[in-house]
Length: 219
Image 1 (tube, rainbow, N blue to C red):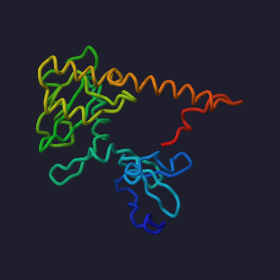
Image 2 (image 1 turned 90 degrees about the horizontal axis):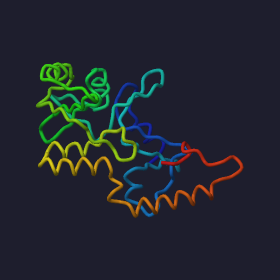
Image 3 (image 1 turned 180 degrees about the vertical axis):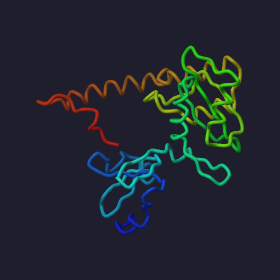
């Protein structure tokens, strides 16, 4: 690809698309993972661009507005929606700790996690659903929406869909909850190996200025 082609495929101000980044922090290669490289990197005139998988748009002042994961967009009545603006809107509700709208087959499901110690009655559920900008098929109140194992802050949409599509018995739901909350239990050898490697790396990188800060790790 050339720089001209990159410009031609870039979207205009105000249009939503996938965010791609470049710079010294972007890895030029993945170790023994050509498929991952082809899927996540774009090389233009020798410059490597990283496809973040996040959607966003740029305003006229140059500000970047996040819209959520590209793969989580869905269409209702000919309109395309992204999860992040909906999730931010749900956070304004005093009873809601976390919430989102997910596509499950042909259904559009509003999922709400209440604040600790709070309950969401039927009237509150209807009010929140009515305020949602998307035409919904159903609303589910879930005591704990699964989040990603690494950050514990981002919604794990795949795990959420699995729970919605196959809630199963109480014992199975408890097992899934434990696995989502404590995924390291199934990967103890990997964690031990990673801890040893990380400690070795810290010793190698330590210098007069101390350890390399986390912000300098590449993606």
